[in-house]
Amino acid sequence: MSGSPPPGKQNYQGGSSSSSDPHQQLISRPVQRHLVHVYLVLAAMLGLSAMGATTQSPFNGLIETGVTFGSAMGVMTLPRDNMFRWPLLGTYSLFSGMSLSFLIQQFLYMDPSGTLLLGALSAAMFIFLGLSASATLANRRSMIYVGGIAGSLLGLLAWTGIANLFFFGSRSLFSAELYLGLIAFSGFVIYDTQMIIERASAGIRDIPGHAMDLFMDLFSLFVRIAIIFLERENNNNRRGRRRRRDDDDDNNNNNNFNRGWRSFSSRRSRF
Image (cartoon, rainbow, N blue to C red; front, side):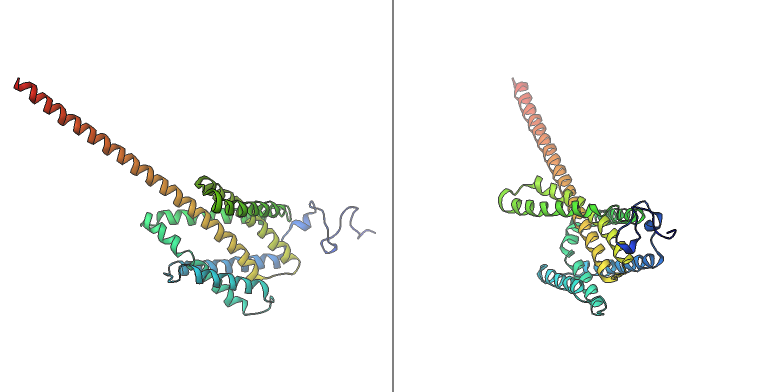
């Protein structure tokens, strides 16, 4: 009986374990190697996406959306040992970047120096890396519940977005959707990272699928942060134009007053 676990605790292979068991909180070396491979593939996907974002698309986003959806479905549905998933993963990354070409053009139109675009990209990367690292270093399975909260919030935002599109048309509601969507996908970063660790610990080491999960999270974070930055810059420009217009009106009023006063003074001097 000395080799049996204490009451209330079972080993991982038995299907349940105590969250306080230190041996269950450690990430094994094979899982660590799997995580390194996943993040390396993710970095390659980001490089392909950056190449696609610099490409001027003649299809107005329709072809990119179709190819992106089809290649993602292929990566998710094909067997894990099918080598055709790798070119599909590269296609998905490239065309995902091409779908961002219009957004990138808007950034460069408002800020030709690229500082605004770099700020949005840096913010998305810092948020992603920070949340993913915290999920990796936290106790295993301690944050998986975040996925349920994020999924519920995302479903609510989907219905709210449809209602706002067809019935309300409120810019304030659209801005609220952006920030709440940012919170939801931040939760998905935590959830997907811990699920990758658990699946890899169970022997499911699907590098293309896991890398695509994290890429989707980072992609969604960047799009929402980019739109938030554009909205803020647009509001700042609008306020600046309104302030300059008010200043011009004040100057015109002062000039008209000065001309009228000089004219009145000259008429008085004649008398």
